[in-house]
Length: 216
Image 1 (tube, rainbow, N blue to C red):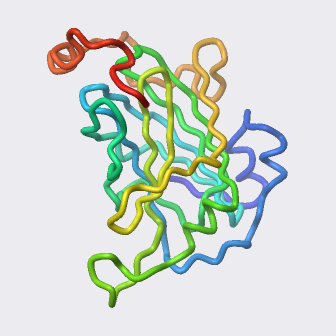
Image 2: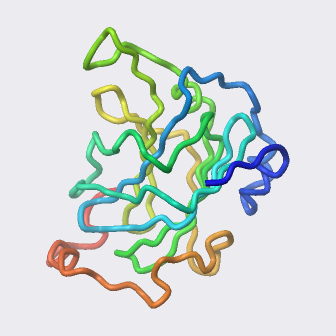
């Protein structure tokens, strides 16, 4: 992971909208924690791999992640209300995100996707809020655990884990996903340059099921 400051941080997200770049809200979100974490999830037996992540936070810092905590998930038919792993050894930042842009191989779709997430203040404010921990009221719970779901058809959703309750869908997040000739940052970014193969587990799971194998 690399951290770059100042104007260079904006260039990390080249290809994002100029509107998003002018909305840098530097220093407006004082966090009560040292780091927040994001993890990825996929439906059961419909795997994906994330190859590159670029993040711009509300302090104006840019991050590049090439070592990434890869997606895991067990949801069948629809997203579970409790997906996400909490802490991640790799996917973390110091201030709430303004934007995240990432490349991912959808093995089930046999293609590369490029996704951009643009976060509004309601997400950023929620991430710096606190409440008594559901498991122990003497402890404090911080909404600093983000989950990004990757599903067939290139569908992406974003949640915050919610203190023992169902995850909070971040419905205000602007999500843009492209593939094929529309790839920019992610052109040539793949872990499968020789093509995709379904595992026996995948073949068994999707047998007699209709694509996209659920409602995502």
